[in-house]
Length: 136
Image 1 (cartoon, rainbow, N blue to C red):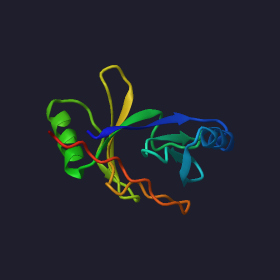
Image 2 (image 1 turned 120 degrees about the vertical axis):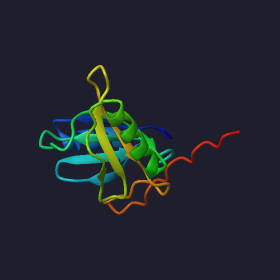
Image 3 (image 1 turned 30 degrees about the horizontal axis):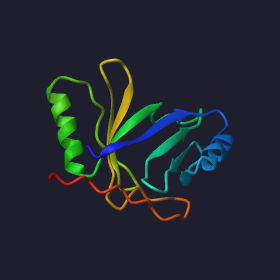
Image 4 (image 1 turned 135 degrees about the vertical axis):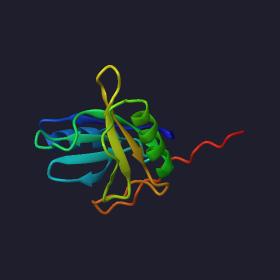
């Protein structure tokens, strides 16, 4: 795992939420009719804002991985241990992920993030993912 990369929260007023997080210094990098993604320009950590209409996932936190094969390995290991996991999905932005619940019922996402970062759909340059720490 590279880092705890984002959290996703439900919001009732998308425009108000985007203004609030922009005021904290986050940058809007994805803006859809039912969700938005705000990122720190310094390290790429983010918050996904989910409108009431968003149904693909609910509130969750996400561990980001810099190697796509690691996501598959974690998925396969959890499934082999009998832990319920959703399928791995390749997303249109070059990421891939799956969802699961921890033993306490909290939702989380295991996400592959390319080293070049998560592309933006609002015309801004992607914020590169932090470099993985080298073993030393």
